[in-house]
Length: 172
Image (cartoon, rainbow, N blue to C red):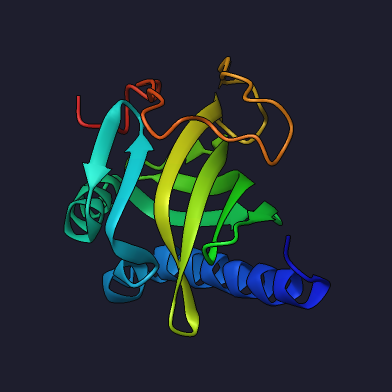
């Protein structure tokens, strides 16, 4: 069990990680984006399992090229600290984006995440993205059913499947 101070420091560090991540996406700064991930991070997203920082960055270079602008928001994560100095959490996501063709795309989703502290910096070590909605900002698009893993701190297993849902953004 962690102390209140340890929890506050971890939460602050993880929220700063999320802030750096969102800023890097907006600015298309792939060096800063890459630094948000542990070298051996694994990311399950849109029917794909990405293994390692290099693969994650390469996939996102391809994905981000399909947009004119990306503004993403990560909500305050519900966190659970572990005795080994790691943490896990659930973070809700929304985007206000413009695709390359000029159409609006405002996805909603949830990240199930595992974090590792490396020196003074927290990084992502594993994450699963579940799409909850895909479409324009007026919510007239498609809502998706996602597995319910229970309230935090419940987490999906590391081998949880990811479902390909976007159709227009992934590697089709």
